[in-house]
Length: 106
Ligand SMILES: [Zn+2]
Image (cartoon, rainbow, N blue to C red; front, side, top):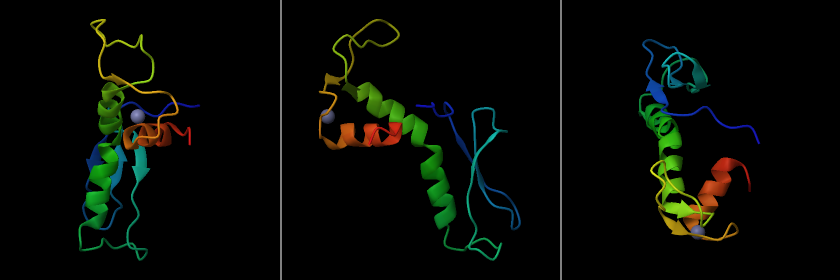
């Protein structure tokens, strides 16, 4: 599976009627462009910005979840210490399911 662009990602609110974007760690490369309301004008509810901030936080949220769950008993952090709690690779708990979903495994 292709890996995703490593985080952090940033939400970029554009002025006027340009679509907001999710930018990569260099704050230049575009990860995603958020849609407007279809007419090219920005919606007033702030939903697009809220959605954008959630999307931008995804790599960090995935990273946190992957530190909580161990799929391999020999998994260690950069300091060589065991972290998290071991879960079977097919564990049906919510955390494992969302990690597999984000990785495109389910
Ligand atoms: Zn689990």
